[in-house]
Image 1 (cartoon, rainbow, N blue to C red):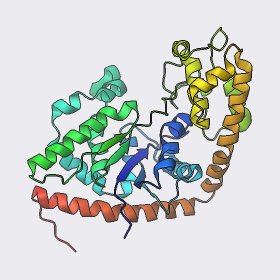
Image 2 (cartoon, one colour; image 1 turned 180 degrees about the vertical axis):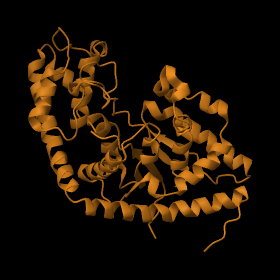
Image 3 (cartoon, one colour; image 1 turned 90 degrees about the vertical axis):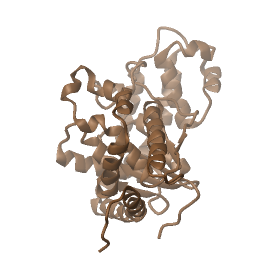
Length: 340
């Protein structure tokens, strides 16, 4: 029996491969900070991953790599529950029930589907369209009270809150599903491309110089920061001027994210200077903090049996909670469920 703390957190990372510092600062680093204060379920969302075509062998490797990254970054599998989403069937089972609760009009308002499907939405998978329902199931199956979210997931969490309220109302079970609250760390800024500060840092960008991967060696990190776009100007003296320069603002966000130093203090330190010293210092910080994580990920990936044990243990812990919720949901909905 796992000890349940007062509040529960659920979050996850897609096993898309080549995790970068945007994934780390935007999600994983935050997971590490909250694991002692919440009962945490951190999953690897492989069911979400297959909303677009995947190579099965690469998907398995990427799943293990995310598990390794969690652990290498400081998530303790003895404190937090680490598992891959598809190993707990209750996620998919609850998602079907949520499909039947959610209104089409709600899903039609989800902007992320429009962004990802683009002009060719008729050829997008139905899974991509109902992705927010599976995300709601991920959260509600553990009766999560809190969910860390970035700007791109706020709308989906709002939908989850609507679904929870509608289920409780439809099946006359007030407070059965808690209404999950967002955890929004105001100190975490969205990390953008090193080549174009108006675009999110992404593994899909054709240029390797647009991002810093957690598996990049030190010399590669230094080279990428040196080549990162800035501006034909000296470091501005005021934050309001920084905000007009996307690439400079992004580098300051990265610096602040890894050190905890407020941007205003960084501007005071480097104002009026060219960017060579700033980039050199930023490179040193990134190398210092990323190198231990990189080394530990590579070490863990050499011991896949250990990673599989962690995922199996996480699956068992997650199932213990998820199956209880699912049994209660089935009873509320009116399904006959013979216990064996």
